[in-house]
Image 1: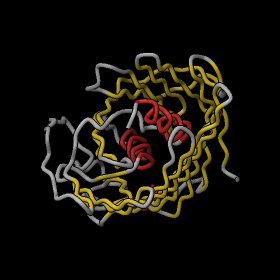
Image 2 (image 1 turned 135 degrees about the horizontal axis):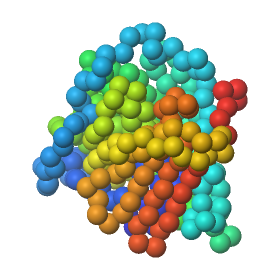
Image 3 (image 1 turned 90 degrees about the vertical axis):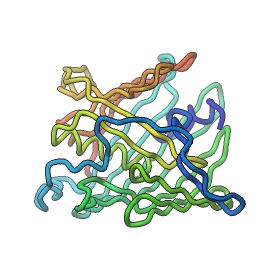
Image 4 (image 1 turned 30 degrees about the vertical axis):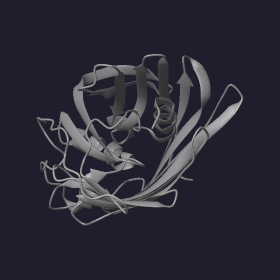
Length: 271
């Protein structure tokens, strides 16, 4: 994929920012399984159990949650990004939608994810998702994951492929957002993810850099500063606020000529 396609997916769908940092074993209808080409060491992985959550902690005061973000490129408004959560106990359906326009060109996309809390691993895992995007590129993709999370099957624009990750479960970006939020609630400071993209598995690392008081449309609030690490050619920072169920309220991304930021402007529980 080109960098511009990854830019579109990021501002459309949150964490699709970069080329995969690690090629995980993959098989499709024309190739055999490949071995891992590169290894990276991690301080803490997503498979490491955190503080065990009891059933009551998953009963949301607001089972429906909607977060709407204004997104800017170099200070110019390009549109909005929306994330909706429909909770049923330890299961959650997440719908992410983006609608953007820049220089008279419209683009965006959506992804619907079926996510659940895995009791054994004490993490959120992806069951399946459906993604579509329009603009510089067109994606029509479905993905399904096995119960372990280590195997995935995708159909992308009609082409089938299978992926395997021995190092950690494969998830989608909506699950990453949830797992960072969950990790912050129990004091986790290091995160590692293997994320399913349309044609590979991307390897991401994030660290909590502390708490800050930040200015938002809702006033000055306390938030965790979470930063992507092990990438020297870019800066990605997101702030997650306890006031909003430890969800993201602000983000910034800089890489070469790219300068993107977003901020929570609306929060709803009835929609």
